[in-house]
Amino acid sequence: MKTAIVTGASSGIGRAVALELARKGWRLGLVGRDAERLAQVAEACGRVVQTAAMDMRDTAAFAGFVAGFGAVDLYVSNHGILDGRREGETVETGAVASDVLAINLTSAVAALHAVLPGMQARGQGQIALVSSLAGLSPLPDAPAYSASKAGLVMYGLSLREALRGTGVGVSVCCPGYVATPMQAEHLGNRPHEIKPEDAARRIVKQALANTRLFGFPAPLWPMALFSLLIPEGLLRLFNGNLRFTVKKR
Image (cartoon, rainbow, N blue to C red; front, side, top):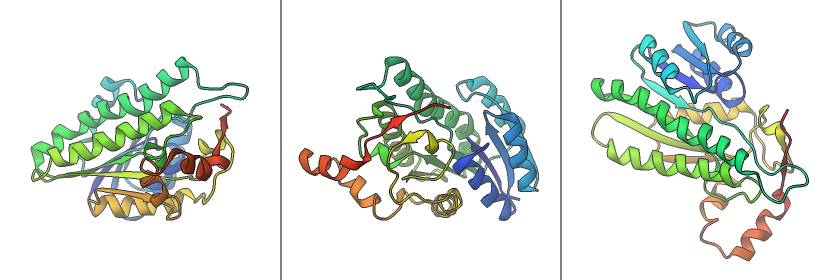
């Protein structure tokens, strides 16, 4: 039986990835912040599932969970938060920026290194880092979110090359708008938004194929790739209707 650990599994993309892997018969380790919702996801999976409710900034707690879980064939790093400019603000606060970077980037890198040594020792395994199109196309309303996701892109691609030939693969995924509870905090247009189930199928398929870098949906993916190359005025024209604020629940 193949094994996978999924973080951010209590809702949204993580929940959908867990259900997708369960349908394929995988043994799962699910990590999230909400114990009640996590238990509901585990029940829905209907497979051999271990769960742990924790803040992913607690690296020691996550390392303990990994040690108790055993060998990991697939690690899906999906946890994170969306935050940025609130209504009435010109730019996000320093406190918001610090929290976003700590959760989305720093904790993601630290957690990855709780899983990686076991994969290296076995000479096999696949890591899927869930970043965002925002990591390629900067968001003026959420600079730290863009920075955190850009950091995941570069870290993942660099790590992939470092691990070449070891049997451990790294894939970086850049979703666009996905209809999740987190996206509901995004007060603005969300063009080409897709369902979490659609995102999960693409993530699992491309990760298991060891695809280097991929994103979706199709209309936004190529635009994001070229966003740093096109003139600033043209970028503003493309992104003019995508300005937003964040309202935390």
